[in-house]
Length: 408
Image (tube, rainbow, N blue to C red; front, side, top):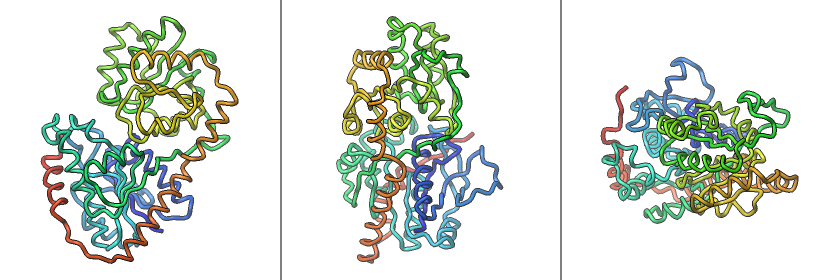
């Protein structure tokens, strides 16, 4: 099968979405399929650099997301590329520029387009012109408009599926949790404890991901300040970068914890598992997670996690070997303290390995392929021409593309 993945976000940009797409691409390719990435240009990628199966279209930074970009040209070029590689299906990973481009390409080639809904925008509307462009109550109408006429939608969790149904999305939908590409056995590992001058037995807490305000990392820092009262040798490593970093560093200074908390900055994708391995427990105080990629990564690295209850995690966590879910500050403190004192047993490791078989990259790709097959079968069987764009799509494009660009 020839598959086109259309995304505004791809490496070298670092995000859970980019990781999910890269994992899917490589897993599909390992099963013998051809996967083509249609994405935006990036300042870190030289203009004339050749990237096999990756096509980049001229772009500008998006309003509110200085590290996210929107393509502003290349529609006809994308159609020609898609024809030349004989795409069988389009899979959009964004509701913005490349998503609209993917829908257009699918219409021109008369092939189905499916979509993965990665982001719960109700929690992120403050990024869009400080909430003036899109408010929380308008998200449902806008997303319903984008997904109108999609052949199918992939939801990474039951929470996402329930949300989309609440928005009025009626197209065929399937819940497919994002998979994780496990590090190969024998892969050389970096001794990060040595790099950061930690002893082998020193208890380490890890927070890893984009430093955004909605991730509530400030709560993790506050809890850590209390962990030190009973476990003074503990350290907190905050791996990643983002708009909240300055505020978080100021919080650390106010608490006089500069020698107890380390900000690593952006982490190379190839080093992520080394950071999990360095820690005793992975912690997230975010209540906006929809697909839990970092939690699966922690599990794959044989580390437990402490996180906020959510419908997705409530289904994932069925044993303390996997993690502990909490509802408030005190429970978060108790959960972290428990894992810093609790040994990582052989039984825990065996349980995690068993659990991982359900969420590894190969299983992820197999489930996506099964959905593609079902969509292709029903699409070609119906062979119905529909109006493009329909009224819902017109409404979407007028609303979401209003003044989208941010000047450098």
